[in-house]
Image (cartoon, rainbow, N blue to C red; front, side):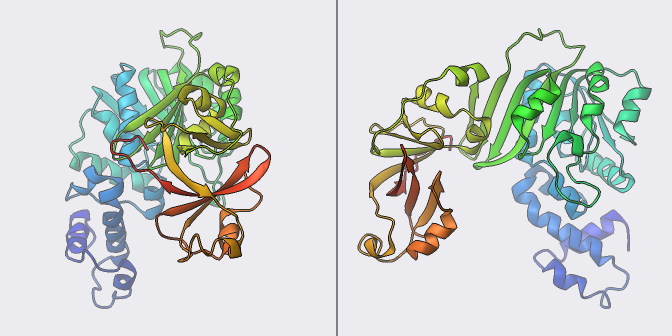
Length: 406
């Protein structure tokens, strides 16, 4: 048994079983490649949360774990597809196609697309999967994407590239020059073949350094999913783009979750010119911006846009006496100032349960939790941070509001 369909059928009959335990039963199923079956069971386990559209395709064959780990989620792919549509694009090339998640969702808004992949096994599998998904208007090219661009005269509305972020030893890397392909070496070729170039970078990328290296960035999109930074996208103007190169750089700090998509957009000049107000005391409410805003570095601008006071220059928490319902991040009600000493909080937290958070504080959250002899849990938060120049602690409860962006 080695066909895709037979493996899928066998895996479907063993849904819910432990893939590792199933691998030990090779003697019981000598004609079955249990490695591939386990691969399908693992993929099925991920799919409903990460790629619900693929999960509904009963004939989809999941690639190996490393390809699944490196792929976009459906949520982030949908965001990029919406960006593609908003730019008025109709053709695209996914130059580092992988398991085809971005290719598929781009194709839903395109009249013509190209999927390119240099790994032969992954290429053949994804080509098959795209057909099973009913994706149309996609040409599939096996081989090196840069060679393809050099040998063809194609001009695409959008080129999308997600360089592999692992070195020859399999270690994770972030800087463009350490990724494969090194897009800095091919930047002129890439820009020559498109109206827009969309580059996906590591969430750990140094944005200021990347902007300096790329040079012609039109927009930056920092995409977080449920308050975890997933992707940093750089949108560059290609030489075929009619837009003016003088358009100021815009940074979009995006939070995706079940409630709604929140986009905190700003120009670097706005942050440079913003004059934050600083707190002399803790107010009734405490705010923490969502992680995309923190990654984007809009620290002073948050204070001016929402009328909240920053705790300190290097403490990216904010406070106010009036509830700011539209604040883009987590909101806490401050119950009381808290003495951060284990003997002094016995009467305040008799069950010793709380979530411990530290921001610009001398010790890490795990160490403070151990020092205070607290266990993780409950509905209360112990938040420790520097206010002005003084390390302080507060007992807080998070405010959950319906239809909030975060």
